[in-house]
Length: 316
Image (cartoon, rainbow, N blue to C red; front, side, top):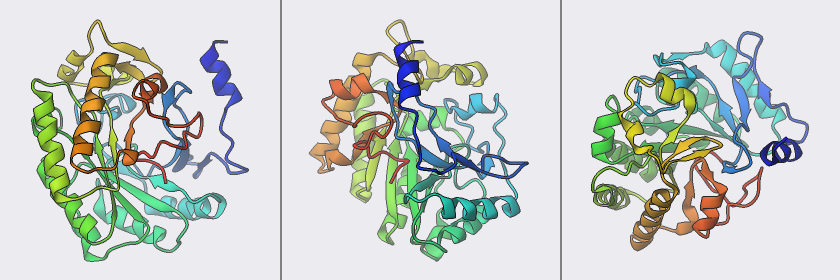
């Protein structure tokens, strides 16, 4: 048994007496505790709400390419299965938690279904629902503002989005939508992930940050760089993004990663740029990044499995 296996066994999370999943016989993991990442990867464990599977946007680099073996057309579960399971989870999960509804689909894939799910969260005041999206369709959130909802927009530099996120709303439109929901009181978070080291990347992403912060101040910003999971690389129909993995790339506990020194350079650029524009460094986190790189950046995310200092997209 190697060191990672020993750590994983020793530190296996215990959520008091709470089950790690809630579901039905047909759909056993509608609510599931995500704890797959190994101890070497900083990723605070969190609750998933798996109300749907697959995504209309079909981004070239997305891990769902591998999860669903290249067949990403979305489908949602029947509400008659989702709602009772949600209420069971509400009653048994004692610690106030965030339920991530954008892990296996885009949270806005079926707005009419999501509205009904949101209504269930509004009936209680302990747990919150995280909506994670590359959409700009926020009309249903604005018409009747909600209290138990966090809205997170995944954005990228426009040139990268046009190349590898071809079916999504343009980043500028996503940011405009983020501005709208932020202005009416929603906690609004931003993911800039994956950051690609495209030609002239500093200018491209610098412009993105300037535009973002000219429109709103997100509650949190989570950064990430390309992650080449084996199944993603196997089933993605467009692997042009994988060119960023070269002889200097790193194999990690969560897939291939680009050159460590380049990742450090990217993150330092973002920290400096965001700080220059007045954004609080304590509200920035890295997504599924190696603990060693956090230390190299002189950041302290805490310790496995809690990573309590990592205030990233998916947790309270």
